[in-house]
Length: 194
Image (cartoon, rainbow, N blue to C red):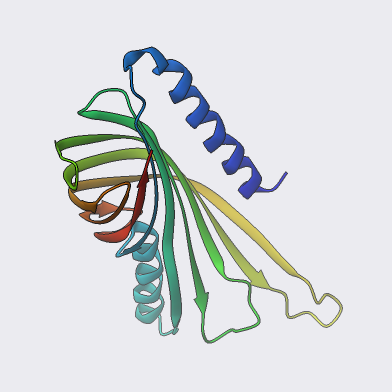
């Protein structure tokens, strides 16, 4: 089973668990799904740190960074509190080695969202998520007998703390968030409420 499938199954279980646990807490269900893109994530910080450390030792790494692209789901157990999860994917590729497989960071974080201003066409909120991330790293073999690439990965703790989020619209809302963590310090996206 690949790591992506494992994270997808875990995300589905977390969503199902949050729906079952809190089904009786509110008479009208409020579900939210969102897709976002962020700038300045913790996995991006890892790529920048690797570039700095490489420069200290005289090597050069020129990373192209993509993401994080995130999907999230929250179920509102009350007008103020929503529980759910965020899944994100970010990738970095060394431009100096185009034949090398890009490194990928896959993150899954259960979280809580506090909607402290919730109106029909505008909302403001804060979000806190903690979870795990899987970072793949790959290296190419230059042996003449062996022309295969090997990959390895590592698990680590990851988080997102969005101190201020603002959303505008009706059932489909645009949003921006400012915070720190795997989704980035500046996040923008689209949220669907149903």
